[in-house]
Image (cartoon, rainbow, N blue to C red; front, side, top):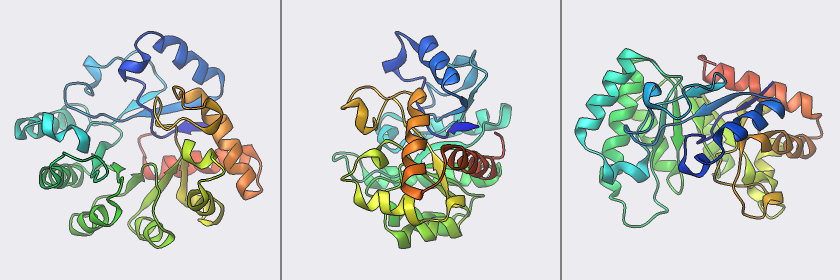
Length: 253
């Protein structure tokens, strides 16, 4: 079983051919697709572009790069959604200190409030941690949640171990497929297999063979094959392990 633990199938990049992209993913053996939210306007299931796709499982959350477009009222709306129709996780939430011009204090405020929501509803979280691994870990230690996934992990082994201690799996995808991504590839070789989940982050982070083109969930089997090669395992072994890990940290799967 293949599970894409992070895929923005509701993104505008798929508006022209979403049905075909979804069908191709199923044909490739992807049986579940976790679709994180980025704003409160796009991610509630009755309004979603993916409501008719049974393999898709939604998370609700406000992405750190969208906090400037959000208000405290959106957090109240998010709480209501969690009460009405609990999703698989709260996410995509976190911090992003790579993009300039986004208020870091405002990001932190929204992140903290969403961690509290996840704690209140006993839901896992899908974390965005770009250039912000240690600040994210700091908040996780303050506000304990039931775990989840550190998406697109690109930190150190020590940081990886800290997430694992807190009950998180680490998401790896297209970046792992580049021979120059030495740190990421070393992590995927040496981390405990039970700490790894597979993801595409489609339409973003395309694997090496797409030459910067649009990513899609149907690429997940080839991404799994790269992980298998790095670890000296079969594709079936890494696919099964990743799926089991995903079900552990996201019990709603």
